[in-house]
Length: 199
Length: 199
DNA sequence: CGCCGGAAGTGACAGATGTCACTGCCTGAC
DNA sequence: GTCAGGCAGTGACATCTGTCACTTCCGGCG
Image 1 (cartoon, rainbow over the protein chains, first blue to last red):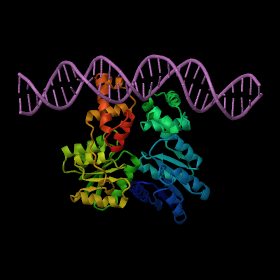
Image 2: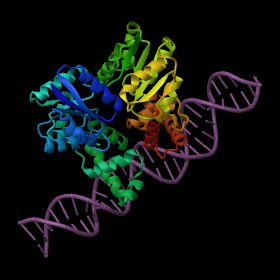
Image 3: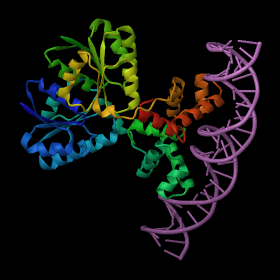
Image 4: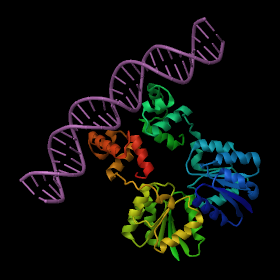
């Protein structure tokens, strides 16, 4: 019997996944939590063999939860289930000892089988993410900051004021970002960065 | 026995919700689909009493699906289950005859009860959405089309070529859209429209 | 010390964007 | 008919954006 803790912030999805897992004869859902902190709080009571967790959650995300688990109860397996294909997340998740990484468009009937394979010691990465992790993120933190501000609709002048830089500097740096991303303008750049999970 | 069709683009969530509903003795999940178009394709075979659908989906979203249902099989009830609290979505959904509108952080055990009440003729709106200021959608379909193209990073010239219009026309129309949305530029306009659920 | 490399800034330029006033064209209402 | 209103388009203008060459400043580093 595999003892499972499910962590997911959307209550409806949380309950649905729990009921999906509860259908399997060799699984017991020993607990559910809406975020990483709540999961840690009930960990001692639940004593799960495996944690299924979302990544993007308020309060404490799946990555931080994995880091805590790795330190506190390294025997507990961890499977991430997330919406977007973000290579940065995958890398950090693997570094945190996560043994399974799935997208939410994985067929639901596969989830149980993947959990069993992870419990058997396998490491399973969603194939859609395998090649994604190869593409290096060309952006540095400043690039990301600029793109985020540009994405809000701020002009170069406004961004410059916010970052206490000259407008021309912003213009030049944003221009470099466009080259890095092969974008024709800032809107295109934001779209590309989002799509690649770099933003 | 209530015959239910579930429409949701994330396969894992789709399967999970289906299994959640299948637990109820008075429900039968007669079909599932990953988007609106697929749902329409299997509608005749499934003959559902009620459709549970996500809103944001590729190919055909929940709103368009509701519009088709309203015309083709007006007896079929429709419950929307969506991630974001966007007033525009709610309004358009209600206009399309939707009888239930829930956020995905509704507790999962409530879903079955809400479905039963909708089948009994009630109209149920998630309380978190009730008090949202009901600002009217100022955009027409052309506005939306322009914004979507602008959002991809296309220039006025490119958009003009795509729609077979003069560049100046696009410029003027997009300028009007900016006024309607109180936006300072097209990026801002896209952001505002998205946030309000008008895009 | 001089040299190099990075970050910041400037100036100039072409092209894109946003605003406005104004001209046609068509269509439905009166 | 004609009148108003909507849609498409033009031209002019100011501003913003993207590109490039170049300068300045500063902190290592040999």
